Image (cartoon, rainbow, N blue to C red):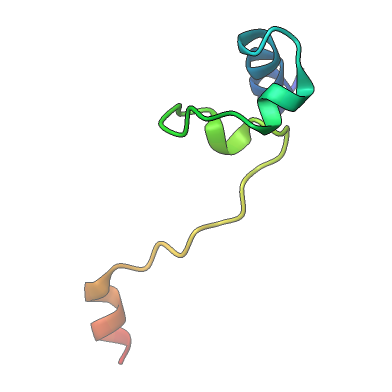
Length: 56
């Protein structure tokens, strides 16, 4: 089982097997939250302000 599938399984377990509950999960501070739908989240721009100033 892949790590993403394992996370999805954990989320389903947490929501008593309800796919709809996983989709509507309100626990946004959970470290698994971005992965709950069984996919990697889109990359977030990780450029810091210092790096932006250096690139200007």
